[in-house]
Image 1 (cartoon, rainbow, N blue to C red):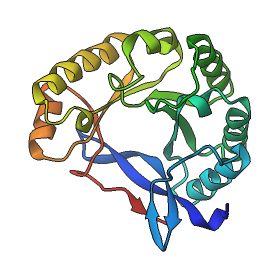
Image 2: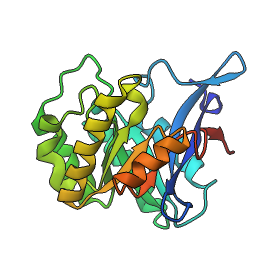
Image 3: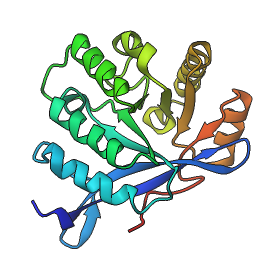
Image 4: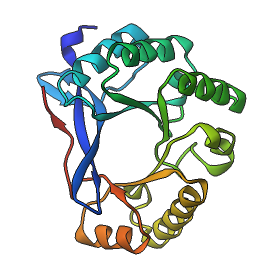
Length: 220
């Protein structure tokens, strides 16, 4: 693996109320035949390799920014991965670093207690925790519930439920209300149209992300 063949694209998260940049999600890309694409596998990346690319990307973003990095369940329970990202946070204290726990289900069976242990450890070292794609795949309510005391943010991906818009709206309302009840930040992902903005406003959702605002882009 060559480090120059990997980089992060960024997608901006917006404060819907004021149409202001609220933070940046980093999305890993791999260069294959001269084209940047989503890596087929993250398993060959060592924690040190991954953290080096995270550091490089963060240094190309404004200081004081909130930076979100995706980890699947396998990566999240990897002590070495957490330690590598904690070290990034220690070296770059002017940035806020959030770990987004994605719903991607790999072959390894992850126990709830493993997720809880990692959540306690990561947050005790100053990292923030976000649940990405809540209500989708493996990120269901009962699995995530024990981790709620340690999470700062819930993210709901509207695009995961297309074309079942009624199902999407009901699930969105549930998770938006859950976040409000738990006093957690809530972000609506997959916003592509003005209609999506109106839905967010109707549900008093304050933060949004998607092609309506910004597409993932190479920035360094």
